[in-house]
Length: 113
Length: 110
Image (cartoon, rainbow over all chains, first blue to last red; front, side, top):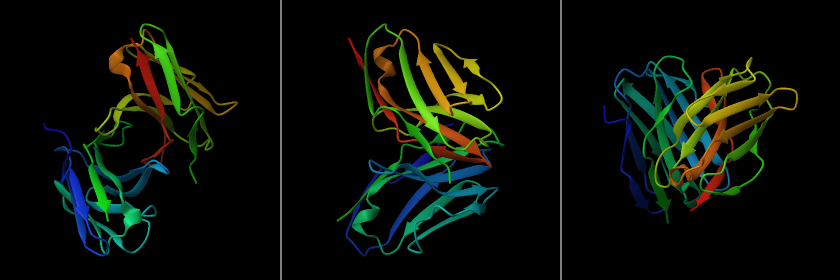
């Protein structure tokens, strides 16, 4: 398996534009997490899916952020409209069962100018 | 909410020496504590975990110690190698979710 695949690796967009980040989890994994990483706040959990269903979205900063998981092999994180303070590295991670080992993708570095 | 913090932002060690990375946590109800390693430009990678009812767990060249009395967690790396240079995060695991600390950057000097 190629691991968790995220796209794009880098995204530069202008303030106010819509941004969509994509994630393909490891096949067979039933949990998916979206994290945001910044120097100031570290790794923040945004949302957690189990069996494609959003279980906890309390970390989503505001209504501008939304996440979907239409099937077991794909998830998106959308920011609309984007703002400069959204600039960060966004990670997707997947996990099998209820274990403690989550597998992270390479991340998407988002820059909003 | 969850709070997992680290004592030092940067740790420099000589190649071959042992490294100790420390972490404090606030939620005593966490089921597990976990250490992750993040190399530059990559996502975090699982190293080792410890169940909350244990005091010590050993892996390959790594040992994690848990002191529940003072809510302290440490990661010991034996014979540190250049490939160990990375940022190390401790995380707590509760209700199927992971909460990460701010990270310690380990620099290994040749």
